[in-house]
Length: 196
Image 1 (cartoon, rainbow, N blue to C red):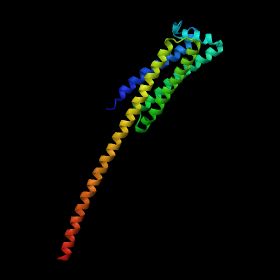
Image 2 (image 1 turned 90 degrees about the vertical axis):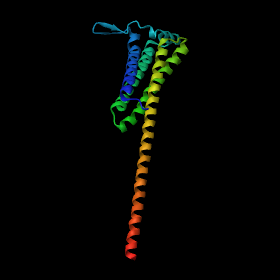
Image 3 (image 1 turned 45 degrees about the vertical axis):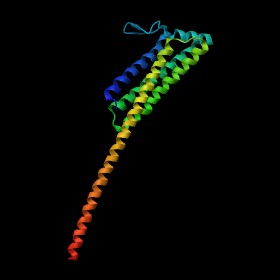
Image 4 (image 1 turned 120 degrees about the horizontal axis):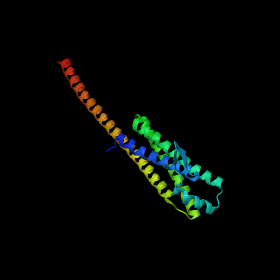
């Protein structure tokens, strides 16, 4: 059974928000947070401490650390954006647009995979694996499940269409056979009339 469009909307919205929050952690936590409307968000987040320690142990400069965190944040923002368009195509799109949701959801999972790989490599090289890696792997697992759900929905749609085409072919064949039999009977009657 194909899941409903609201199910896809809720599932994809959750992972979009999750990815956007991870991207903001990568972007603002290493700088001590960001101040918005008098609120100090992502300040002192210990999520990036293990990553900072690993990069310091490797010998990254502050500029290199900023580039790595910017890259990781950008990958998560990119994954969230791809997931947004996948959701719009899958939930609100027609049949052609729904087929375009598959490569977008796979692209989002690819961005999360690259980000997780970078974090794993830096964490292992620096001897520090933190909670951030768990959150990234959780996001990757969620995006892979979304991509698999979109692929499954597409295959169900294709098989349903194939069944509809087969049924239509049967109707056409039956109609043609019935008309052929009627035409043959009519021709036979006409031939008898001419012979008599």
